[in-house]
Length: 399
Ligand SMILES: [Zn+2]
Ligand SMILES: [Zn+2]
Image (cartoon, rainbow, N blue to C red; front, side, top):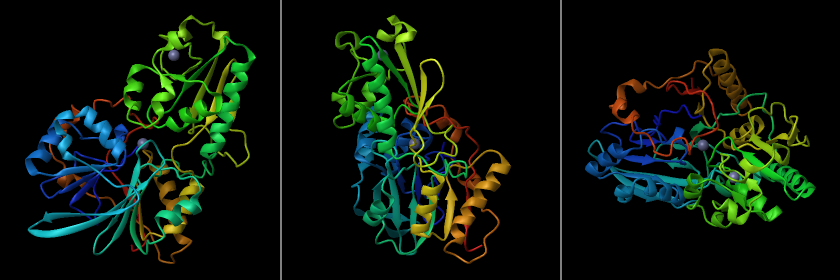
């Protein structure tokens, strides 16, 4: 769960992934993806404010479609970014015309998720949002080859802990999951599968993979179906009409379907998780049997500790800000220690003291906005993590 406050100190006139901390000096808004912890502050009043000041919110085409559906009156305040290419925005800040170059980079976290690489006259800054990269080498060479000196990375630190050294690749998770599904369904023609996910929105690659591998469509409820209609090709793979189609795989989050009339002995429940898979090593099984007809399958939408390490070592930033900062002080110290350790691989400079941005000065009528968060908030929730008060922290090589 993101704890980032939206403010990049290198580019004070933008806000990213937090929309209740801006002020009159904020000129451009960016959204990496539509999970509720990244859309805090997006509401009718926010868009009315954009309209009044003639400002825009930039997001990927899929995120824009989701927002347009939620805010049909404000579609003209949304701008689609071109993924994989540099774009330029001109704005006026404190009486001067300024230019911001940015590149949206696919983040592999959920459909339409992107990172933002910002390029100002003085700094290159990367805001990752939530991300998970497969094929590190290939990906980095494709999108970051031209990156010379990154001042700061605002980083997805969800699993930046030694307990999560590895996660299976997407392909490995999918293959373990499909084997489990096929073996259960082949055992008896009345057998069914019940799938549960940590986040409603983000598991679409698994749906696609299951459909392609097993040929079975997946039963989803209407809310999920309405959200997924924005994702190309997915409508062929999921359906709401369970009784007519006699669907055998269910990701419907309820029992108002054939699951309800079926004997529990016929239902295999599979929970997709990452959080409990501590100390996973390459080659370990991605499936864990939990007793009865219950299994867990490991799939992560965030990078493991080693993946974070590789990412940081490739980009060699001068400063790192943890965008998912733990609540407990001892865990905070541990995370900062790990980030420092990573940076020591390429920098000899001494680093200590964490830096905390004073967001208090720029909080703007937050209370009014809290009441009207994104309407799809539970549908678009992230994997459960306890939320803490806004307080990003960083590792700064210059300090
Ligand atoms: Zn997310
Ligand atoms: Zn169902």
